[in-house]
Length: 138
Image (cartoon, rainbow, N blue to C red; front, side):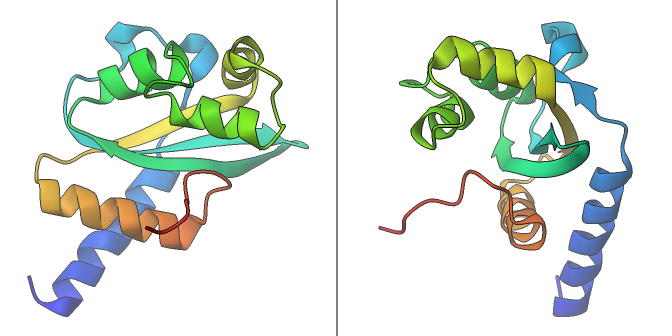
């Protein structure tokens, strides 16, 4: 793709993502999340406002969002829970899970192409600047 085509693709995806109706973690069941590849945005309601908390990508959104983020252990693939505990926002894994269920929601876009998923994740992270998930460089 040429530069302008990439920018158009990224901007269109951003606009599509932020205007989608979110799925609240309290309403999340495996059947409500597709087993397809894509990028996702987790937001939290803080002081009555929706704030970007985490941007990610996965080859299987159901596995990543339901099994890892919601049900997983912070020592495993539940990175958002790990960040919530490390920053003191939550005291332990159970509190982090309760925080997700009571305060967080997710939106996603399906994208099969690995390069486009990577570009989207980077772009969304740069534009939305989520509270968690931007880590120390190697």
